[in-house]
Image 1 (cartoon, rainbow, N blue to C red):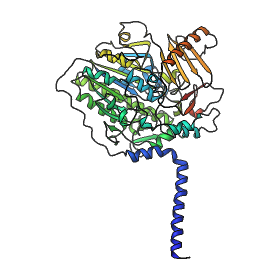
Image 2: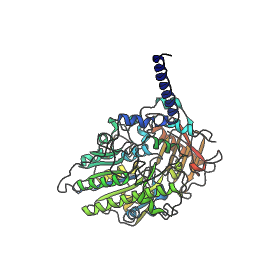
Image 3: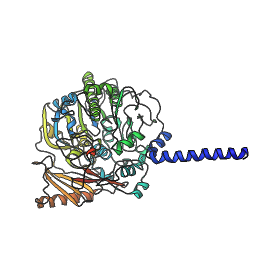
Image 4: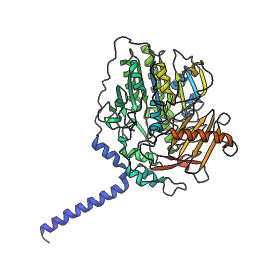
Length: 550
């Protein structure tokens, strides 16, 4: 054999080996491609200092400051002032509890829906997100496929549509339409300076970025981030091998944020504390002018990562993953305390309204019980566990501390409440579904707002009116009717006996469905969400579940 032939065979063999190795890698790691492509197109650089805009040297207005603190996937039972707390009640949230003690603890706070992105759209616009067709959460192509593949063999498998998945736009292009009016756009004519710090998740393409939706400045996370690099000596990680979402996140996320229209770069330290510290700088810069600060923590969403210093405080929690999650809650609580302390030091705490809540309930896929206790259901479901959340309002200038309000309030109401408080003109060219709740919280008005709460995700929807709640899962042809006034934990389905009330709410639901727009993009996956079990427990056809579409 000639030397040339030997060389050709060597080259061919090498290429063949590379192809085979690449094929094997792709077979088991294809779900990492969105992160690889994103890192190629928008690499994550080293940390860069943030230069926030300087505000005026003297106070320009008596209008109140507005701070919305939104936590990601925080369940009702993870805040100790609601009678719970993680670690069998041993994990306390003293700063959040004090916020409630100094303001109003709302016992019946609701998110507009049970999943990240549409709930954020609803908060910022005061509208059911489906009015603008913003029905589903932006996800990368292949996400549904991964969940479907990892669920093979389940007694109740998801329903996956590969054709729809292949036709989905890039996740960056799944954004909140520019035609929607947001809180910062509404407040701008009133002289407000608006800043976003934290998770955006309403579109990363140029047309959808925070500064295109009215924010003057934004230190933002597109959809998610690591809290610290996985191998950082200060971090404790908890991976969930039974959860496809966790697998996808670990395979694709970097430790990253963006500032205004910059590329991605590393935060300076543990993400939750980093976001808090930057929020303190915004408060300092804007202490002399009315400001809107939207502090949207990525915590306590997976991937589960905590500071070792927080983790070490919780050695009484035996389960490693639960201990990491509880430590993540501590970091959020610490942030709330620091924000309040900064307001006091600047002398602007009395004239600042703080609204603290979560985007949706805790998820079943983290494999932990009781996160939404006493409620049934989880994130991605419309049972109370998915939408009934911590909701605290503090505004010392108008609200006496130490109060509890039992009427139903929603994240939808934040838009109208702060708009009215700021003296802004609420939009009149579109339906606003939330309402100003301040008169109810001050005691000026009794009862609760007279408006329905409603949401849909594909073939699954719910409506609440006067304490009665209807859920409909068209995929199963199933209806649940609960009287939350007497059965707040949804134990007794009255659909078969309260036929008049069922007909009334079905009619209202149909009227509301008719007012919504078609989805901007379709949902490729219908996932069964159990109401009474978490993912590690599994569930069967005999268990209660509903199909959530995304």
